Image (cartoon, rainbow, N blue to C red):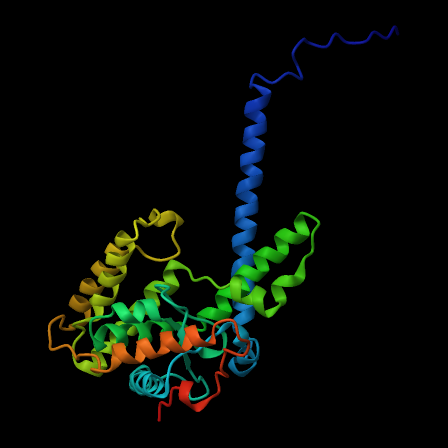
Length: 304
C-alpha cells in the first residue's frame, strides 16, 4: 500500500477574527477573572478579620495617628452624648468607644480599629445642632458595633497582599499600624447599615429624627462650596448625598419615625471649646506626643 500525505486545507489554523480583537477578548477575560478573585479574596479577608476578638483589635489601633486636641469640657460633653447614644444602640459591654477631636479644619470623621473615632474640627464647627452631632456620633459608633473597621481593613489587606504576590513584590508593610490605617475603607452597604442604625438610635434618644438629615445637608453644602462634585455612584464607596437624604425619609415612613420635632441646640460654649482645641493644636504643632491614649477617661464613652 502506497502512503501519501493528505492535503491540508488552506486556512485551517487561521481565525476569521483580527488578532487584536482576540487579544482584547483574552485581556478582558483575564481582567474579569482578576476582579472576581479580588472580590472573593476581599470577602474572605473581611470574614476572617471579624473573627479577631474586639480586645485584640484594640491592640492594633493606630494610636500614634489619633491626635486629640479637645479640652476637658468638650471631651466630657462628647462622652456624655456618646454614652446616651450607646445605651440606645445596646452595644456589647466589652465594646468601648473612644472619641478624639483633631484634624484641623478637615471636613471629616471616621471610626477605626479598637472603637476609636476621630472627629475633625472642620466638620464639628459646621454642625447646626446637637441632633446632627448625635447622628454623626451614632453613625461612627454603628461602624464600631458592626465591626466595620476590622472588616474593611481585612478586605483591603487581603486584596493588596494577593496583588503584591501576583506581581512578585510580597510587600507586607500593610501589616504595620500605618498600613492598617490606610487600608480602612467601607462599602456602600456598610454605610447604609450605619446610617440606619444611627437613625434608630437618634429616634430612640430624642423621640424623632429631626436634625439628623442636617448632617448630610451640611456635608452636601460643603462639598459644593469647595467645588468637589461627587463621584458617580458606581465609583463611590459612600451612597450619594441625595440617596442618603432620600433613605432617611424612606426609613422614617417605613418605621413610623417623625421627621419633625424640636431640635436640641448645641451647648453655648461648643464653638468656644472648638476654638480652644484649635489653639491647643496650634500651640503643640511640631512637638511629639500629641496623641493621647484612647484608654484615658476623658476620651472614653461610658455607657453605664
